Image (cartoon, rainbow, N blue to C red; front, side):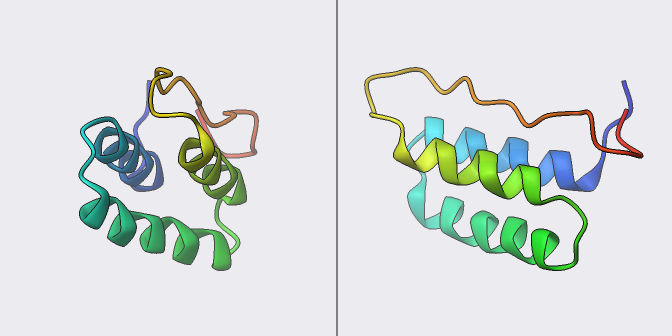
Length: 72
């Protein structure tokens, strides 16, 4: 499985949310927003926003789609 910087940023954001490190998660969310603004991957931004609306007592299980061209 090929890893990408964008995927790594999302994974770090998700982990911050899981560990309730919300100040750091905010910075990573800004990075994900910048990635989406560049047209690189808006699906990651959608997945990040979805994580924010999950109740805290539910496990975080949102995964971005890998069907985008160029993703492996």
